[in-house]
Length: 435
Image 1 (cartoon, rainbow, N blue to C red):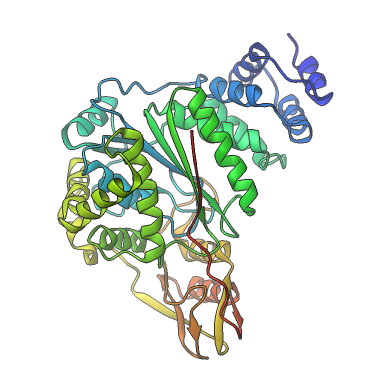
Image 2 (image 1 turned 180 degrees about the vertical axis):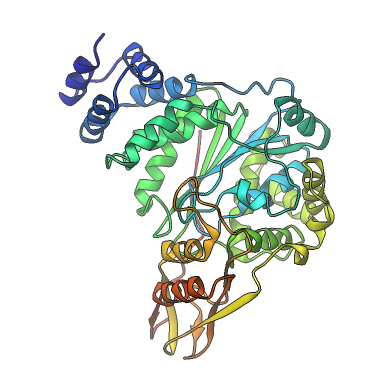
């Protein structure tokens, strides 16, 4: 078998066989196939596409390129959730302990943030002493003991995806549906959970800008997971403005804690409850969405959810008091107000620019080696649809550097757009795809 022949075959629009895809991924992972040939293959895939079987075969080949987590030692149906990323997306911080408090084992591997999207692992490290590097024995014991563990993804999981994504990033081959779906699902399948709920973002702050593209991606990933024997659901959600009111690591943790106490913003809680409903349904913890939502709300109202977060923090090396007293978390002391430039309504927000402003403050990574400042961020006082008068505060920036604060302020000012008429409302939940 030769890579040259496979490139030619795909270039002519013919499907690759299961054996050909496995040979190609194995060879590239072991550096037997050079970058220039794999780049040519990726471009051929972008032009000619992949059929359903090819996409599934590619996903499994990448999954099998490294270690697959064995969660058989954890009792019950293990549930997981994955988001395609967005600005202010702190749902895992709320959802994981909330679902775990209802008896569903949550064995979650999460990543760090890159670019304008935040990472769950970075946010959890806002709790002093919190450890995200767990051994498999510690991970399993925590889930069996308290029902939840959240650890950082290791390089051993789907290493082929890491190599391929780095190549796609510099060859303009990122935005191809089969390549996106197989990249996400190879890691999810390698993590070993029984049930997976996907949060697929759409809008100007998401990777999939168009709703129809987000729906197509959601359907493809649900299909892949179902073929692989997993219980699957995907929720398509709005990212045309930041989720919730806080952007930045410590600030988002504080907002998540308030949400677990029953004080979460409406859009954030719509996302949390919808995702949570399907996690409960797939795990057999509820018969229908109404029962599931009632259980989720009750867990928050009775304090079970916030108590579970405290257990998680303590089990992984932190102090449980921080889960009850978010004001103890480190937040930058300098506070800069961003004010409205005219009267009217906020007609739209450039969500990605809000994320970029947070990154400029030091709250995000431009490269994987960047060191982030967990204490900086943005508090949004006005969002799309808000009525404003000139001089009203739109947002506060929290910074430790005056120059970074000034640069971020200019970005946030330009991210707000005005109109004289109230804009139409955009629903947070855009659709649900199940098996």
